[in-house]
Amino acid sequence: MIFEGMGATCDVVPRFSTLIIGSKCIGRKLNMAGVPLTQRDSKECVTKKCDFRPKSACARQRRLGFQLSRSCNHSQAITVLESGNFYASFDEDCLLKNKAQEVASCLNGRSIFLLGMMGSGKTTVGHVLSTALGYSFIDSDAYVEQAMGGTSVAQIFKHHGESFFRDHESEALRKLSSVPRQVVATGGGVVVRHINWKFMRQGISVFLDVPLDALARRIAKVGTDSRPLLHFDSGDAYTKTFVELFTLTKKRSVAYEDADATVSLLNLAANLHLDDMSDITPTAIAIEALVQIGEFLREENGRARRVHP
Image 1 (cartoon, rainbow, N blue to C red):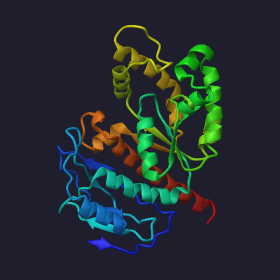
Image 2 (image 1 turned 90 degrees about the horizontal axis):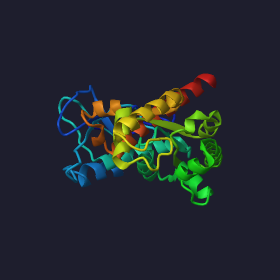
Image 3 (image 1 turned 90 degrees about the vertical axis):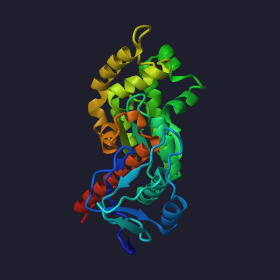
Image 4 (image 1 turned 180 degrees about the horizontal axis):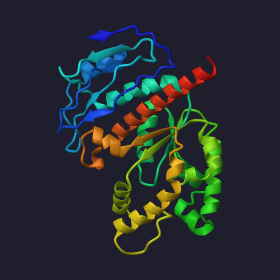
């Protein structure tokens, strides 16, 4: 059943439930589910992408349930599926594309700043988001390294100290904040300086909230050579990494809460019915980021209407 001509304005962003059901479960019912689709996207998703078998041994077939709301695209049609009768299964890439088009039309070119601890996936997710939105991608650490003639962040810390690096990091954010249509993956400690928030408020900040256990396992697996704030020479890499991350988190956790939107991987894994957070794909995280950005924009526009009725 298709509803067309829902002429909502762009200040109303659809509220999507992020229910993604993995291959192990078929389950949680919603009263109603809907995916806003343009005619072109509907054709791509329904006819062209009708085979949703996993592309690799690690890939999972995803099923996403959505709460029906109004669309911010006048030309969009909404495919409505009554839960309990059947579920719609869509390819993640198609869902990402559709959600990115919807959110991009309401962003007005505002940049996105990804926040989070080291190892939280800011760079990986940032590439996915920027491609989906048609934005440029910038890694702020790489930006500083380039400004310093190619010197790595680890070497900058070693030879000049953290304060020197933070000064250059703030200068990088000042410059980047004036450029529209970018996804910026920031350094983990960018939130500790108040001036950086002034720059990031020019866009939308999104915190990738990953549990310390998962962060420690990721970092211990790949090594800590490029992580200047992790200081240890020997011993169990996971345990020492966890302890260092715990110390850093105590200093930064309150600041991360000031982000405009938050993507909780713990909650996302629960909604996905996944026991291991490493099974969550970067695309699924990017979709959730767009959902949370859309919710932020909806609330922001609501506040603006109350102030200027």
